[in-house]
Amino acid sequence: MSTLPSPTSTSSRSTSFPFPSIYSFPPFFTRQPNSQTWTSQLSLWNSLILAYCRYNRIWRIDLNTAIEWDLFNNRDINRSLKLETCKEVLDSMVKKGDAEWVSGSGSHVSKNTSAIIYWRRPEEWANIIADWIDSTGQKNTILTLYEIAEGDLSLSQDFRGIDPTILRKALDVLIRRGQAQIMKSADGEEAGVKFFGSQ
Image 1 (spheres, one colour):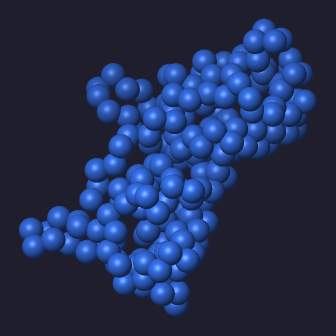
Image 2 (cartoon, helix red, strand yellow; image 1 turned 90 degrees about the horizontal axis):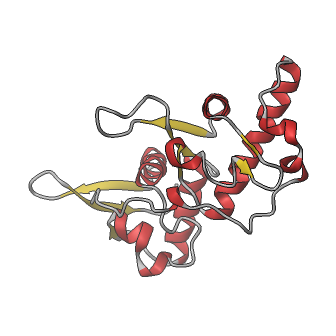
Image 3 (cartoon, helix red, strand yellow; image 1 turned 45 degrees about the vertical axis):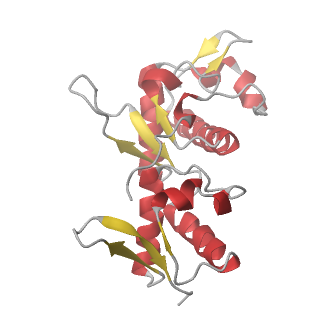
């Protein structure tokens, strides 16, 4: 049940995203030394990253590649956000619950270079999935994670292609609410998720 295609959206970048006017302001790309200005700047970056990721359906940001995206590089004004500042912005997002650092693989991967972006929180995804289960008549049905994220019935859903970690967190919310249960095969492997009606 845990095998899903790896998210390909982490390498995506948009050229049609409607950037806000602050994106064309050169100081926006430089970490401001005044703490009050920096707090405001962090808030603006947080909002921009969430909007950009939602628009492009990006679930994770890997700073090793994302640092080159137009999100962090405004080539029109020849400005880019430094990697260290990007990490500070994502640290701030993590503290607010809008992102979560995830471990990479391999011994050469440095700490805090990849983050899940919560343009919707797991609780929100849980509500959306529960509504989808209700509207598609799948109560008391067992579905695999793949069927939820990539199946024919999820084609038009916002959670289509959802990152497996986010999906699992959303399912954990439904399990705690008594709206879902992990089903296991005879050998103890996860076989799917059974959904129940709203409690």
